[in-house]
Image (cartoon, rainbow over all chains, first blue to last red; front, side, top):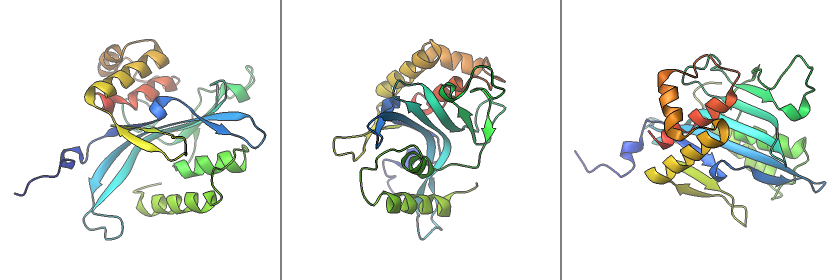
Length: 158
Length: 70
């Protein structure tokens, strides 16, 4: 047996990624106001030696939380997928934030509205195209499309 | 176990947390979201105290981070 690389023990077990130490990243809109974006992922590194294009290792998403907030930290919408633990909701869904709901509405922020699997690129694109967030680079569309293409090619489901 | 920061030039940097730093981040998350320590959350999670509570997304927000401590 050869000497194992330092990261070998990290293969095929869950890891967490907390964007900006769980604090929302402020996104400036074209109108000058701000939105907050919180991202967290569970992922694993898997060995895919048969994959000549993206192998021999790949990062595979195990769960995600993408939350878009107002500047004061109140949630507008959150995209979740957490197929672990005892939660009865293991499929991708979103929660409507309290900021966009009237208290007497049938839909509440606690409901799980079903979605397909969402890539972070889709959330970023939505923030730019529909929520008025200013892109930091002119080629943002190409960058997001390229990232999403990789996601679509390598995802194992959804 | 990683955390990503936005830098001044907006290029993210990735910081891999030590076990101690990961535990601190996890504890902070449990206190922020649920008002309990990280250890208390893990004990409650293992006992199944949160099972069948889909109306509490904040529980899953903390549970997302369990790999920081296990």
